[in-house]
Amino acid sequence: MAAITKERKAVAETDYVGRPLSWMERTLGAQGYRILKGLLTNPISVAGIVLLGFFLFVALAAPVLAPPVNADDPYQIPRDGYGSVPQPPGTPWNSHQPSIPFWWRAVTGHDQWVHVMGTASGQWDIYYGVVWGTRTALRVGVTITLIAAIAGITLGALSAFYGGAVDMLIMRVTDIFIAFPFLPATMTLAAVLTPLLGRGLYPAMIALTVFGWTIYARLLRSDILSVRQREYVLAAQVLGVNDARILLRHVLPNAIFPTLVVASMQIGSVVITFSALSFLGVGADVGYADWGQLLSFARAWMTNLSDYWYIIVYPGVSLVLFVLAWNLVGDALRDILDPRLHGSR
Figure (cartoon, helix red, strand yellow):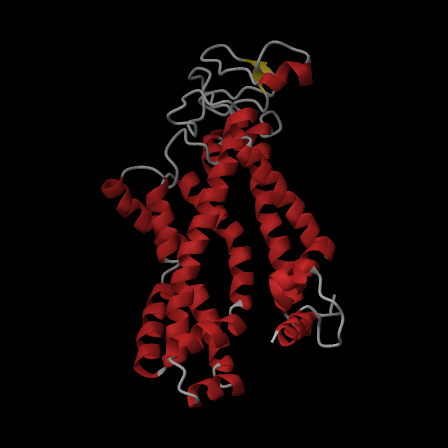
């Protein structure tokens, strides 16, 4: 018995040609290891991962990089008075100066805390908005995408697997949601929810989730329709395996990857749309650390960007790089998971 167990263990630790498997290969499995290896060896994905790592560092280190003025509401951007004219980077604080970070004197050699990136109209500090806005972007993008993907995957899987009346009902509901123009629909729903839930992130997040699940349902449905006709699925049905086990064990693992690729790329799109809602006044509350909110403060000065370039550049570049990072990782994932694209680039 011990000899049989030892032999099985030896087989499990080698691939189909007898090559010993590494610890990571045994832990992640063949598909997981292939994806990780592809991401770490693809220059495109490495660039995206480096950018994401930078944003994650800024989000985690936000209390150190930009100590909050109000510990109860750290996302509130501090303001230096109420003047309407933006101030350039390096302008000293005149009032309500936040705590000076411990690293400031060591890095700059100065004792006076300044507006590192200048101020927007209303004297909102751009540096605090960009740093704490990174947390907002990660929170909004990941949360909305995760909830919308779970809802879309669930409905798309049920629709494709059972077909018939279930498929007809779910897809017609999906068509109704798709018929609404996305940005006007989310803006309208967020405006309707704001009096009920109060001004803040949640009305816009709910609106983006309500109209964001359809892409996942449609995509997964088409993939499952092809997977469910394969031999191993039909064999499991003949053997009497229950539907839940077939769906979760045999169908979803072989159809989910294109949907996950789209989800990774949608995180950036969600953040852009949320920033647009904030810019239009139905997203984050006034003064809340959000890149779209910073761009909203700049709208009155966009015709004079030669002098006030910083009110657009810092939040705008942050938004562009954040979206680019997710798109690079998603694009590399698509190349790794779709064998038809191998060697096409």
